[in-house]
Length: 299
Image (cartoon, rainbow, N blue to C red):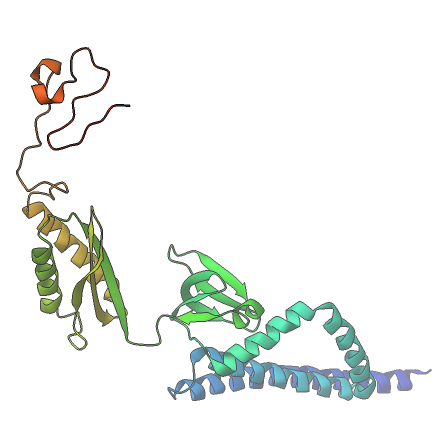
């Protein structure tokens, strides 16, 4: 091989390398541009969730990069058909080895298509509760109530019941209060209802309600319920509890069952000498004296 042949080979492969490098740079730029355009286009409409927009933008980017890679290989004379066949066989083996991961991928696609929740929703799924922060192809990110990150596989999320607390604008709240039978039950019910009806955060259609839900020998349970917006239902319930507690404190506490408020307990005899004659047994008899009107017999 002489110098002329070496020069021709250098020029041929050198130009191909330059072309391949240019194609890679242009393809990388075009892929980024396509990703930004897809994001911008889908973000302009309110019907597409931001998570779905990010998924399609990533799909467009990596799709263009795959085509650019195939074009670069063909530029160097490499047969892509054989590479595709090898990749197909390899993907089959990898798919069998990564069944769990691929199931998470399929579940992520289903979550992105059907969208049972979106970023910012408060959900309960798979035994975990929190606010949705992100949804990717493999995992779902939640922020728990104490702001702890929870990453759940999409397969577990898709296969479990999903409780979405942010879909509807209003949410019911309830509170049960136990009182003693001789307490001012009607007054507590009227005070709680007046507070709920005067609070602008509480929906008046349907309006708040109060009723006696349980009644026993030593206690009576009163139930309060109402409707408010999902973001304010917890605050309204807390304010109702504080109002009822203030009402009980103004009333001087709740009296004990079976005794009127302010009544003193019955006095007990200090010793045996204070007992009445009718309460003492007969002298010299092992049997107690019967009460008045009670039959008495001896064996």
